Amino acid sequence: MNRRKFISKTSLSALAAQLGLDLVFGQRLPDGYPPLGIQDPDPFQLFKKDREMIVLNDRPLNMEAKAHLLNDKITPNRRMFIRNNGIIPKKIDAQQWALKIDGESVHRTKTYYLNELKSRFKHHTYQLTLECGGNGRSEFDPPAKGNQWTVGAVSCARWTGIRLRDVLEDVGLNPNAVYIGYHGVDTHLSGDPTKAPISRGVPLSKAMQDETLLAFRMNGDDIPLVHGHPLRLVCGGWPASASGKWITRISVRDQIHDGPKMGGSSYRVPCESVAPGSEVAAENMCVIESMPVKSLITHPKSGALIQKGSTLKIKGHAWAGELEVSKMHYSIDFGSTWQNCTLEKPVNRLAWQHFSAEINFPKKGYYEVWARAVDTNGKSQPMVLPGWNPKGYLNNACHRIAIKVV
Amino acid sequence: MEEDFQKQIKLLGRLLMTFVLLLAFIIGGVLYLKNNPDVLKSTESHETFPTTETIVVELNAEIIAQSGFINDPGVAQVIQNCTQCHSAKLVTQNRMSKEGWEATITWMQETQNLWDLGANQEKIVSYLAKNYGPQRKGRRQNLTDVEWYELK
Image (cartoon, rainbow over all chains, first blue to last red; front, top):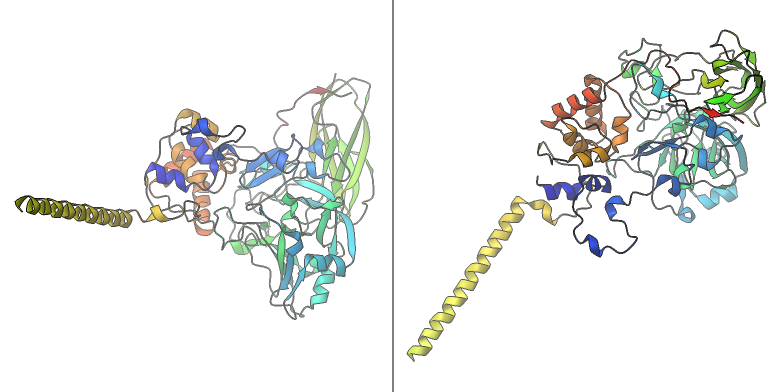
């Protein structure tokens, strides 16, 4: 292979730019026209994201928030994490958008236009917590493969849509239905049109919940493109990968859905706990369902210097997958003693809950404020990393911020 | 008469020469296409990057710095094989042992359309294991990179 052919084969511009070739005819470029090689769009501008968000990966695009950016009670778009397994679709025609319901367990395949879904079925709005299954992966030891999320792959926006249940009941299901799987129009990184980057799903019991939506609005507006415009699934409290974006088809299955990212170590953890670094055979891995109890201190930002004698007000959110958070504690002595936070009830099921506390520090020095939520089953967040798993999912170790009293 | 005859001979000679040249050009063209069938294909095509060839374009230090990869032997092979489908960040944010990187390459070949890396594989794996190998973190690390600020 010669150099020229090698270059012409590069599908995206990045490598050509990296190769740093002379710009032949460069002087003839129109003013303000960047050569294709450096036309990679600015994702912050393109998707209206806060400049403090962190890009973990730009192809595919993955972006997370920092704890202090998530202080809003309802997460705005600009501070909502972005998770992609493939390439974001470029052209969306909402007027022509259709959703097909098929699979082994429907009475008959049925297709609805989006406009028909909006007009025929009742609209519902819920605030729903979506957390990436791999949020906190960066702490795993031995390290786990994938995007190295720290704490910011979680959001709780207001989603408006129709109940998936209403549509499934309109189609009619066979008694052997056990699972649903979504299909979207994002494309595979390799460019192979026959491959789907991701096609996951949930058991029928989750699909039939009141809060499981086919959503078309987020925080009162059309869903932003990067978050699934014009139609996405929202399964609050479960790994966010269960909430497929840009969906055109839902298959009702008579078995656990077997699309890409449903098998192997994807969004699955050892059915029985294993020692860190263990090899786990595929048949001993179980699909993650509800996310575990977790919380985040969103105010103040870690690193605050405060005067001795002043009171520190902390604020944050806590959530517990399918459950509710029943108690919220904080510690300023590395977990030796715990104090109660004020904890609000969720606005609806599967929405995060807000907590706050006022802290007085006994003397000058370095402190860490640790936050620990307890769910309605009595399970609380661990202070160290929970059970190791090959892909680094479900890290709900308590969140910590650094404080100095001066 | 004699002049006319000589003219005709010359004309015939030129004609013959033209045909020979044309024939040579056609044969040459066909042979070139036979050996380089890709030249007629669209450069936009997303076909899988080919084969087991090991030719590597040398990259200068500035280009390597821009890529985000550590400059070390094997980096050219890594850039040219590992950033075709995904960005460098997907590699550089990860830490894996030699076995881990090998397993990742195998997984990409089995499920993600990664091509056979041929003789480059060994260079790629040793580069990754050396520069992006695992670090012990224990069960919980200290809070690092804290930016101190006065809270009003």
